[in-house]
Image (cartoon, rainbow, N blue to C red; front, side, top):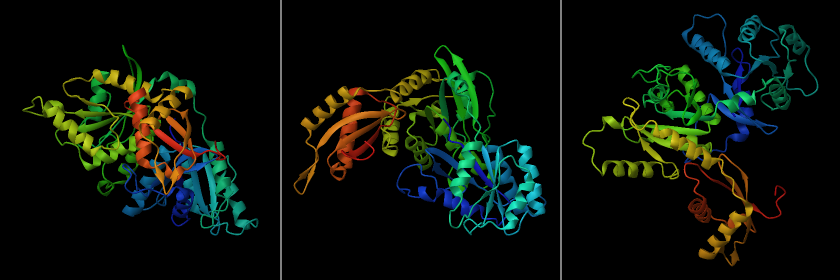
Length: 444
């Protein structure tokens, strides 16, 4: 399921960015060498009551302005509003309700989205200034929520209101859409062309101008292989090259499309070869735990191919995407249709691998055999003891391994156990997640 999107909007200088940073501050522990980590300051993630939320920060809205920069900021906010499931309308308690607040309120009501009025700078706990009660006159369904973005007080009440305002999802409709496939890649890699070839008609705009696709577009396809929902996404490019606000939100939608997907098709332009940006894009799918297929498009444009050409290309991809050796590689041409129908067999296969469940008995047979062949590591006389393993989730297949000392369970031995699982059970096309716990943890 897609993570709900929350947009923080309001006029300038009401504390939106401070609130944004407070909300996502607990999720700032990012390992920099992890592939695909985004550092776009416009959006981030937070978690509340077990629910993950995407939070969008926006520039201040000036309802009436001739200033180009302020007008662009308003455009950012309007796109964020369009993308959001819930809008947090931030106001400043010190100023009370302003004329601009009233105009923004009218604009937000026209969007038809659920709105949570957030009254910022209520820094004195339990002692609300009389100006706070003015905000009831804006006439929203949700009561105003007092917060202090500097101190973080009231943010829990705000997130409670957000979760309550989230529209209900029709799970039945999701089921009918079959396997959800996100098509991701750089601009102009041929994502829309591939979907048009699959559909058999020009449902999506195709051009050689990067950035033509602004939204994540869903296309349901039913054929002899089954039912699939293909999600065409805006091309993801380097942050330094994202020059306009619309592209910021195109990147956001690409990330949320991956969150919605069961399978990701990672499109690579054969003519350009594997690039650093392809590595980062593939990393988004890998980090999200999605089953993935590497699709090398425009293979027809490579001339003078011989028997070694595919092997050489495979080697380059495997070196560049060393963190996802599990992903199969297929060479296609969206233009001519070459091998496009073969994609469905791969999609079905990697999806089924990602939802595979293994019994605890079978897992521990493999674990015992692995420990006999390669003894668990030891350090300063202490040896790692592994008690048992069990599967706790799918998409990706997730396993908990209980041991006596998590620090002794080195990454290299985890990788060895993962390889044993793959050699026995397959799991081709999907990442595997291992969680190491010391026996006796509160969470076992």
